[in-house]
Image 1 (cartoon, helix red, strand yellow):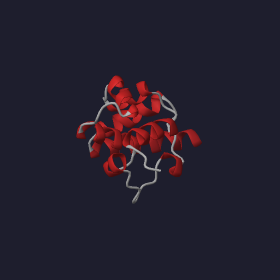
Image 2 (cartoon, rainbow, N blue to C red; image 1 turned 30 degrees about the vertical axis):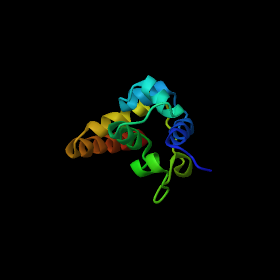
Image 3 (cartoon, helix red, strand yellow; image 1 turned 90 degrees about the vertical axis):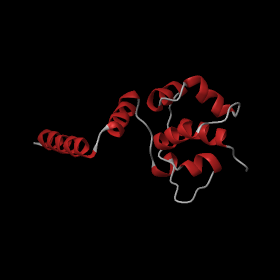
Image 4 (spheres, rainbow, N blue to C red; image 1 turned 60 degrees about the horizontal axis):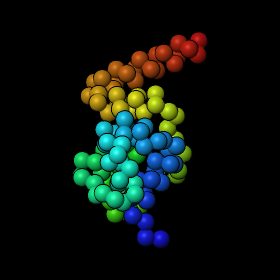
Length: 117
């Protein structure tokens, strides 16, 4: 099957059980633009492709050309977003620098360990 970028985008979104509005909110890609990308009615800028590839944790090459080299998409990896809260957490994580990420991981580990006591 000669799958197009539009098909891959739609497949990834459906595999993660998200709406276009969810993806738009998480990536900053306008929902109407995302709809046109998924139907093939409009081409994507490199910024849009990069934002969507980062969000879906796939390579730009996979989105654009369909290359599956070193690709383990959401279905293969067992990934599924658990709603807007998880999407928001992912977005916050991506905005943090390394020291903020380390601090957050320490806080989470401590909180989880305290719950187990």
